[in-house]
Image 1 (spheres, rainbow, N blue to C red):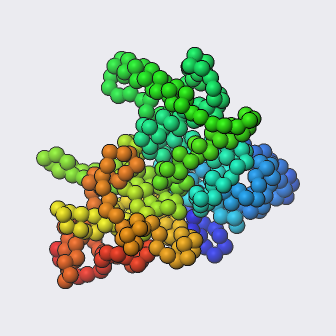
Image 2: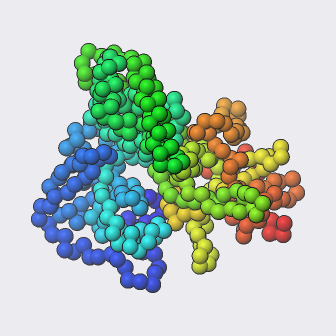
Image 3: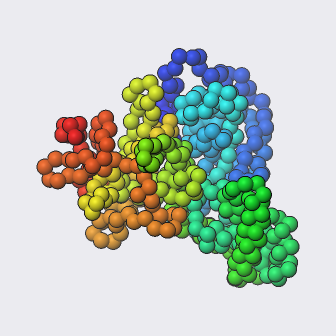
Amino acid sequence: FTQMEDECGRFPPEPSEGNSQRGSVASSVTRAQDVLVYLVGDSAVHLCMEGVGCVSVQELGRCVREALQIPDLAMDAFAFWLCSPLLELQLKPKHQPYKLCRQWQDLLYRFTEASEDDISQDEPCLQYRRNVFYPRSKELQIKKEEVLRLLYDEARVNILAGRFPCDPETWMGLGALSFAVEVGVGLDTQEATSALRERKLLSFLPAHVLGGSGGLFSTLRGKGVRNAGLEHSLLEEYQKISISGNTPAERTTQLLLQYLSACHSLPYYGCAFFSGEIDKPSQGILHRAGLKAVNVGISLEGVYVMDIKEKHVLLGLRFSELSWDHSYPEGEGDSHILWLEFDGEEAGTPVNKLLKIYSKQAELMSGLIELCVELRSLADGGAATGTDGEGGRRGRLHRQSSVVCSRVQSLNTISYVDNGKEIKRLKPKRAASFFTRQTQPPTYTAVQVAESLEQR
């Protein structure tokens, strides 16, 4: 992403004991070779190019846009990514995909916790998908069906995979729209039921919604009853869909726009995602804790920490609501940590809270946050972003029933309060306080390095 590269645009090697996995690219000759650029879904763009080993993302982009007939208005909507089950990286225009593929094992060792066996077997694909730096405000100005279809396909995959947590009314409405995109509108109940059963609910509703729990037989029985209810609800939502348009193409375009517009209501739409872990709060008599697996989504809008298992948001912050930093491991067995600082409350007292996110991708996350903050600042003319209309002051974070709202109480955070003389610790101490930068001039007292902090 950003600060992980040297001046030549290459990923710098991490100091290591073993020999580098990186191979020479000199064997990449200039003869024409086949290149497959995958789209989100089941299709790919097949290109035949010369000098593949030296082709940049910028050059490749021109060929793909021409093949997909993407207009100039939407040329920045998409970017190239190197993706595998272990790691996803958006590439810059100057990057050379072939060379980065040759370095893939090095990148996995540096940015993932994967085993040597998994790393040795992992292979990235070159994917053409939404650019994390593309503003949402521009997206719905696009009217070309082919472009909207690409954006829709990606959003749909994220919804079905549970990567975009959403409430039942949202995923049911999106499922109905997706069903309408596939079969059209206006089918009667019998026709729609037959079409839905032929295509399966799993094609339209998130996988975790259709899953069960408990023993095998109770699970199968409960799952069947539940899915029958979901099928009925989806068909009801389908019958409510109303669009205009004289041609099938016009109606499809409207459905795609409705789907994307609904996705825009989710604050993490358009995020790049990273894997990490956070501390669980202590539980039980023995105060047992542990780690919780999370997805961290970062976009031009802010940072979102999501529970992978429960499929809900633990913390969502706009850039005007947080400070951040990245710390490197201090000793063997330590982790890279992304620190997020934000306003909170302890027993009615306003405090500064710190959340630790353990991840070898913390460096990537920190660099992306910094770049997004800079881009937002430029777009807003340097003004503070994400205010609530009350003189720039931020609203308090409240836990709500919706899965898209922050669950601050369920986080194991470190809390501080400034009483005007010194910073007092309200939770167990950590090694040091180190916040050295803020996204915007703060409207609260940030944690500062203080000797008293180490003594309490």
